[in-house]
Image 1 (cartoon, rainbow, N blue to C red):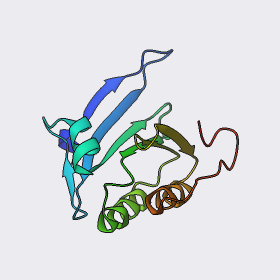
Image 2: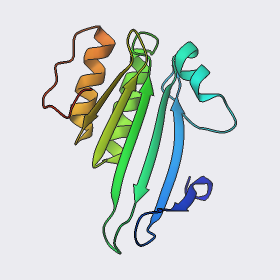
Image 3: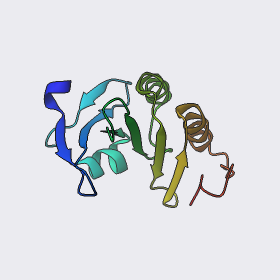
Length: 138
């Protein structure tokens, strides 16, 4: 996986390396690398989960991992939800951003993957997601 990652530098202050990789989780729970596919169509119409991982290293030993998840809660399968939980636990992000596009666009943030999976599971079941803190839902 590391050979397909995109590396860039941040434009603020001292340039720090940023490692960026993306993949889909399909309806059968299989993780697939994002290639030349249309991400918006795969998420909005097919029900794939789009996961974008951004690793930023501001210092020599410090690493900050942000994971952005885009999904349509009413289109994804239970298997895809379980696979997403497994992948998020393996990634162990410092920050999570969950973006849903239906029925109303919504962006939620979380400091850990467990809280994010709880929000995603509630959205999947159609239950309301209450904001735990002012910064957790927009």
